[in-house]
View 1 (cartoon, one colour):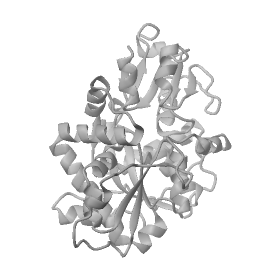
View 2: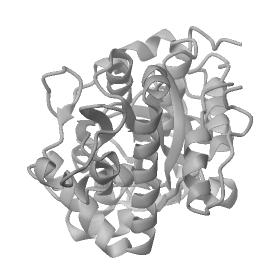
View 3: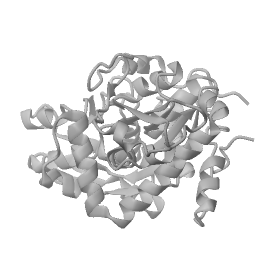
View 4: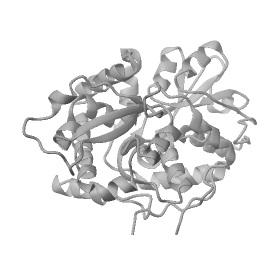
Length: 369
């Protein structure tokens, strides 16, 4: 059954125009710098699927740690052999989806809301979710002088990163559970939702234009470093404290035409995640180093350390939680009821996991076939 052709209401169309970290030649994201790309290709290595390159997109966020570390430590390049791993860095989900749809990237790390929107907007034809990457790493941080308890959030100004993005939906759902009414488009109501780019949220907080923010890491820890207080960790609202914050997506065309390359990237992702979980301190340093390469500035320890602790790295896409997040968006009035059957194809990931003797993962009934 095809997905809905009107996934996000018209007010969300403007989000696709949010600015990127920098403007690359492709017009979508900034190219991640890798001065050692050629040196990372082993002598005698062969191309994967005959490809010169595989183009990988991700955000400059710690919640995309798999991509950051996999890039920095060369896991993706090793798995791809003589096929070059090329990277582009984004800071807006719609822009990454547009790049995937246009063929400017092949595979990407992205949050659940833009993945759902991209899938439904294309009537289920353009992307598949092929793996998980991270859980958690989202907090409600507030000005402790203005907000001392959860009930004090009512009547205050709370920032979220973007209209209809994953954290925006989560906050609107939480506010509704408190019995508060908020217009999803304008953000006005019993609590004021102020859509603010993560890069400027700390300045908005310092200036007093917002009283708090429901944001991912490292923005949450940046606010704490500015004197904010963590009032709520979103993970406490989910069973087992697990919910998807980052997925791996691929264009359906690339998945069909280059299955070996897709499997190579997934093998690298699984290897990267295993290394991260076995070497958390080294992995934290590697992720921060890549953030510095991509953005020109590494995170200070008082931001990096608490942010890193709140993120859980996982191969599991936690599909049931994506389905729940989509329902939250519907209930908030930001999403038409989507048909998500077919959004997942976890067969390539499960082959990689089985080959390593690891447990396979489930698509919660939302897989192909």
